[in-house]
Length: 403
Image (cartoon, rainbow, N blue to C red; front, side):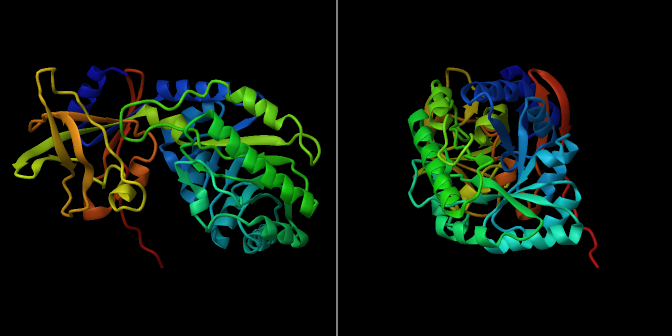
């Protein structure tokens, strides 16, 4: 996608504006497929970006779907995913949403506790269905992930609890294997290999102690890519060979079906956020740049300090080489001091009306932002295939009566 296309999109649809490139999605999917074992399944994690066009394009690229809510399930089904090939995950599934998923044809769930196994069993009885469960495990050791799921104590069984739960699996539920997700943003092939090895050893321990088959193992992901700054993820050359060696034989029996998951690696580079400079203020303590995009559009959880704050990187599409660099705080338009996108960042001196681009925001853009805060309209999301416009839409925020 060219800078000219980005500028034309901003002129046509206004800003703030997200632009997604389907051609880049296909490139990233092909790259990831090339470094995974040939027989593996790759699941797209809709939490990264549930835009229907994104989900549909990745389905066409061979990815299955991993969903964590009724809304994500609806998008996956509308995008053409077969219900029986969707994996339903998440640490707090209600009885109602499990029953809804079963009624819509979902048969695979990642279960995180004995209580959830029982809840799944009651739901199968209520709906006259059967379900397969993967036991989500919390390995006892840490990982080299940038954002470790080991820090999230709400996720999964301990190995000991999983073994105990296997003694009382409810009727209507079949334990088909295990699921481990160690975290996001592993820095390189070695760290990924070591993480997957930890996941495998934890799964084999539980399978051996509980006497359950490992028909399916979900090893998670963690494939790295930058967020909201220029650059690219670590090259993954050699990962397939490392995984082929790691997964060739299993102490628990025949080799299982292996799942991997990815959100960020598949979609981050396909997304650009376009935003205009509303104001530039020179203060004794430094320059302040005010944009029309804030944490309501990009990285709301980061803006509130709930996750690591991003060092957002900007490309000025209006500036030539004649602009001297300036160190500035870049803020959004919201009426709160929390609305900061970058602190003490260096960029060509901006001017009112300049068009800035934030790259690598195809993942965790609108879906991780405070879209309802201060009731500002959501950003338009435009979908292109290379430089060809496919669609443009804005999410609708409304209220409906409940009785």
